[in-house]
Length: 152
Image 1 (cartoon, rainbow, N blue to C red):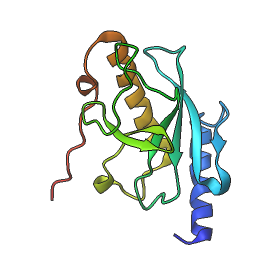
Image 2: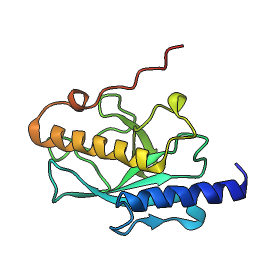
Image 3: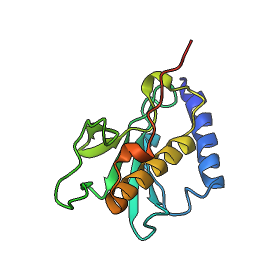
Image 4: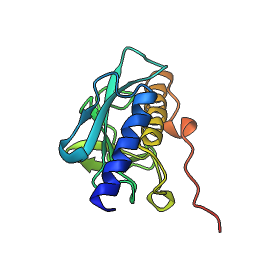
């Protein structure tokens, strides 16, 4: 994507995020819009605030990695064991910059029309499922369906 086109796209993304209130709580933009970090809470546990970062280096052409930066360690129900990186069960994809990467889109189903706002909505779903898992005892798979491959 040409630099001028990327600048227009990022301005559109910022407008969308602002319209939906994502920029009100102090979104942090990385240098040259390389990433954005926002604070999210859940309906299940509104006092717990998470910070989620979306890496935008290859956005919008490729599915951008998303990580949870706060809390740094996401614990399982026992409050001792970190959730494993790269776990189908927890919908995690490993670590990026030392943070837990979460699954929000299947890369093979990613479309350049997808927005940053849509990514943060998916992050919110993941966080809701995580808090339900922690507080209510059901596995995350109960709350999160896997995206099916597109059918031809």
